[in-house]
Amino acid sequence: MNEERFTELEIKLAYQEDLLQTLNAIVIEQQTQISRLEETCKLLVKRIKTISENEMIDTGLEVPPHY
Image (cartoon, rainbow, N blue to C red; front, top):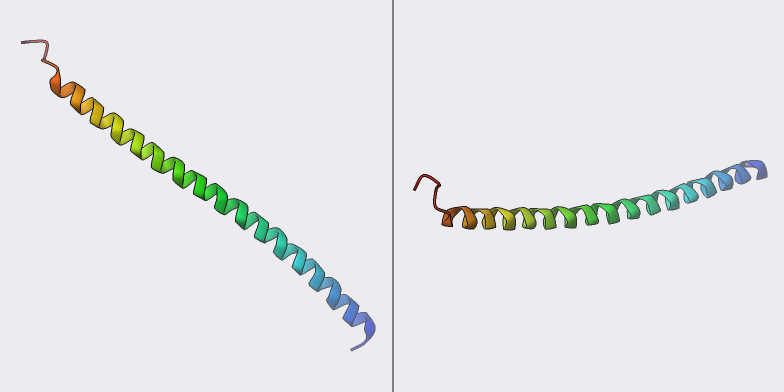
């Protein structure tokens, strides 16, 4: 192999390393977003359950208007 071929391979390797670092940063960012969304969903489910339970308790104590 000649010197020109080595230089070409080194350039390609440098671009691949840069691309790999960029993709890794994107994956880390996406995982952070996924974790936040999962936590938000858990909180929303908890809030919905609480609201549902409160409505069941409130409606269970009310006397229907025809009595």
